[in-house]
Length: 217
Image 1: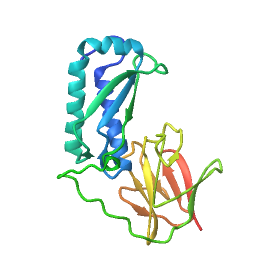
Image 2: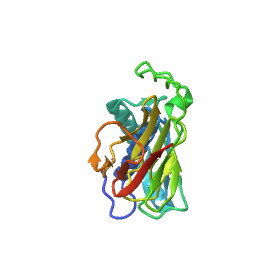
Image 3: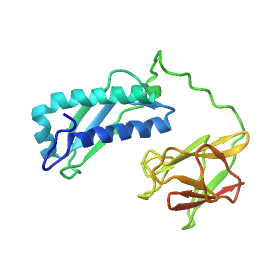
Image 4: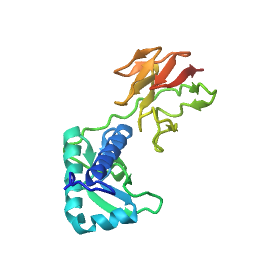
């Protein structure tokens, strides 16, 4: 069903891909916790075209969510639920997926979930990242995500960024940056990083082609 071809309008497989992408983005910012409920916004013509086989489609989408969560080791609060709704802002052939709250926010209890370590208490370290245009973004809290998705702590509308491209984390030793499986990679002082990397003031950071400078007080 998900691979069913259509000459015009939304392809069912694209809905599945968008849901999986939403799961991955949410897991990256919630320690592997993902939502149970997903609302798929569609143009009214696509919604009408899918109506005849919506029951089978929704069943496959729920199974795809369960399979992906199991394969990736994500924590989900319960049986997945998908709803198709009209979105007047969308064009034919496109969709938007809105996930509900992540499992941790629902106080989910899972025999397969791993306990989440409590962050170590430490003094807040003041730091900012400065873009090439001079704009400054303060790193607030223990964990700061950066990407083009609206849910990121620092959201930058740049197509070279992944939805959730990287994250900054502070600890006793200072701030680190970690690439979150981005398409175009993350570099620190020109070196591509593959694991959390400790930062020092004045270092350059490249998120794809986006250039930043890390500054710490």
